[in-house]
Image (cartoon, rainbow over all chains, first blue to last red):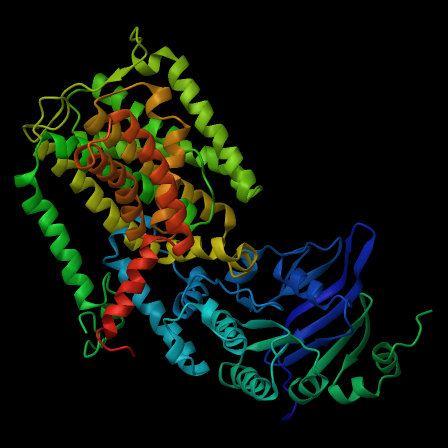
Length: 262
Length: 358
C-alpha cells in the first residue's frame, strides 16, 4: 500500500458494549476510522466483528458506549438514518433481492436519493420519470465500474456466487457512500475472484475516495490492502495499528493460534 | 423468429425504461386494448357481459390489488373478501346518500376508504410474517363481514340486510342497475381496470415497487440500505386495498347490483382471489389478469362443454366441474409453479428462436 492517509476522523466508536442476554458480544470496544482509509476488522470466529458492523448500521443497539459519525455523537444508530447519511454495506451471506434483476437490485441502492411520491410514480411522467432516468445514469456508472454490463437484466438468483458478491458491492456503491462497510467481501471466492474483488475495493477507495471498513478472514488480503487493522477476540479489542504492528503483536498471534484464555 | 428484439437498439435510458421496451409487446398490448375498447362492445350481449366480462374485470382488479400486496411485497393476506366488502359498502352508502355524485369519484372514494381500512389491518405486518400474518388478516375478513352484517346503518336499515345498487348515470348514460346497457357497464369497468393496471405497472417499476420487492426478498438487507419497513409495508397495504376497494365497487355496483355480505364477500372470495394470483403468477401484473381469466372462464367453459357437448345433467356437471377445476389448478402448479405469467414468458423466449432449436 502507498503512504498512510491521515484524514479527519469519520467514524469513531467509543466503549461499545453489546450483550444478548448473558452472551457478551462486545465489551468496551473503541476504535476510529479516518477519512479515506481502508480499515480492517479481523478476529477469530465469534469475535464480534459482524456485531460491530451491525451496531454501526443501527441494526443492533448497544447497551453502553457511543458512536460518533461525521462529528455527531449518538448512543445508538437507526438504520434509515445511517443509510441516508452515507453509510452502505454488504453482507456476509449474500443478501441480494433474489427475485429482481441486477439493475433493479442496484437501483434499490439509490432508494434514499429518490423522493417523488406515489402519484407521480403511478403516472411515470414528468418529475418521477426524470428522477428515474437520472438515477439510472448513476447506476449505469456503477455497472460500468464493476464490469457487469452483460448481466444487467439477469435476475440475480441465476448468477454465480462471485457475480452476486459483485452485484452486492454495486448496490452499496450506488448509494454513493462516504463509508462503505464490507462484511467478508472475499468469503468463499477462488483466487481469481478474490483478486478482482481486491482491485475493486482499492479502486473504490482511490477513485471515489470512499472510506472502507472491512471484515475479512484472508490474512494475505487484509495485510495487503488495509491501512490500519483492529483485532477483536471474544468481544474485546486486543490490537490496533498498521498491518505490520498487528502482525508482530503477541496477543494476536495467541488469539489466532489458540492459546488458552486466562 | 416472431418475437425477436434484434435490431431494436435503445439509445437512451428513457427508451430502455419504457413500459414495453420490446416493440412486439408494445403492439400486442396496444392491439388488445384497442380491440377491448373498440370491437368487443359491438359483439357482446347480456349473457357475455354478466357471466363473463364483468366478473372477469372486477376479479382482475381485485387480483391486481392482492398481487401488489402478496406478489410484490410478500405479505400474505386472506382479507380480500372483507376489503371487497368495504369498497362495496362505501359505494352503496355514497350513491344512496349523494345520488348526484359522479360515479368515478364514488369508485375512487371507495378505494380510498378501503385503503384506510387496509392500513389499519396492515399494522400487525411489522411484527408478524408469513402464515401468522395470513391468520391476522383472516381476522379482518371475519370482522368486516360480521360488521356489515350486524350494523344496520351500513345497509340503510333494509329489512333483508341486503344492499341494492340504485341506477346511476355517468355522462348521461346508465351504467348500473338491470336496465343499463351491457356495453356501457363493460366499457366503464374496462376503463377503470385499464387505468388501474397502467398505474400499477408504473408503480411496480418505480422506487416504491422496488422497495416492496426488496422487503419481500430480504427484509433485513432492505432495512439496512435505507428502506423503512413500516412505511413500505403499509404503503403496499394501502395501494393493494385501494385496488381491492375499487374492485369491490365494480363487483357490487356494476356487476352484482345487489349483495348480501356473507355470500358475496365471504372467505371463499378471499381464497378465490388468492388462487387467481397463485395460478396467474405472483409478482406479475399480467399474471393477475391471466389468473382471473383462468378462474372465471374455466368453470364456464367446462360447464358449457359438459352440459351442451356431453349432454350431462346440470347437477352432475357442477360436481365434475368443481373436481376438474381443482385438478387443473394442481396440474398447473406442478407444471409451472410460477404461474401462467411465467408460461407466457417461456413461450416468448421460445418464439424468439422458433423454428430454430438454438
